[in-house]
Image 1 (cartoon, rainbow, N blue to C red):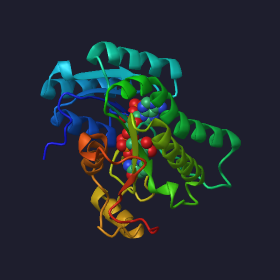
Image 2 (cartoon, rainbow, N blue to C red; image 1 turned 180 degrees about the vertical axis):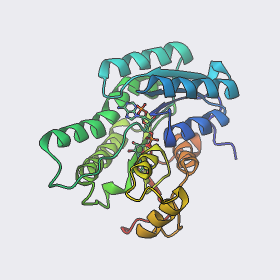
Image 3 (cartoon, helix red, strand yellow; image 1 turned 90 degrees about the vertical axis):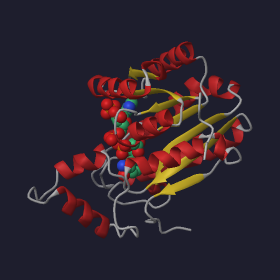
Image 4 (cartoon, protein in one colour; image 1 turned 120 degrees about the vertical axis):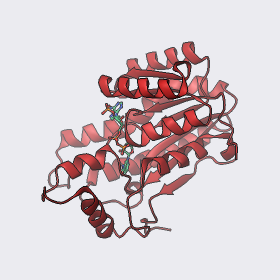
Length: 263
Ligand code: NDP
């Protein structure tokens, strides 16, 4: 099935690792041109070189920046416009979760987390809004978490912030219609650098990677019995971003192996 991404310009924030990098690959495989950003310049340059080698340097554009730096994001958008001429798709993926309970989350931690979750959406959306509107088929896909609907006390501020972001996206879906569709994916546990970092910091260092991940899937009672692969999240992102989802806006798609408990 051709989902209609050929020749489209796609921007992926946090595109140097995990789900973002997998999404970049899927968009390129579908024939799109992709601009990606992340903070770490070396890892981003490695990703850019590998992608340019496989998909052609003309189709890939990378910029090292933090999505929390408003001016840098605005300048990135301008350069994407100069380089590719337009932009149909924005994937707001950059970020990470914070593991902390109410007791060990200070006011500064709350401010940092709320800033990360909200402004990682707001800065890129503002910067690319005009290009998305004028593209004729603008589409935003936000990478969010089941925590928005199913909070975890050990991730108290991430859960609360993600609920707020989901609420924001619903408003944007109405305000931006019919020019830009706005949808989200809700992740459960997907194997990425985030989980690699938690594996590296595991208590029992003798436990193998497979055993640690199997135990995690059992502990979280994931019906499909395993963590997701970044590529599985990426395909859901590409579908929602594409003209194949042209009558879908304000929607959320769970990519969680069935671990959600709400209906
Ligand atoms: P990774 O750590 O593998 O990838 C995160 C990407 O975001 C990297 O490219 C990172 O690069 C980039 N990034 C982080 N902060 C910023 C920033 N301020 N500005 C620009 N880029 C940034 O993790 P995932 O692939 O798992 O994460 C992707 C998204 O999915 C995140 O928002 C995460 O919170 C969310 N998520 C993931 C879940 C999972 O189970 N994997 C579950 C729920 C949500 P760099 O560090 O160099 O900036």
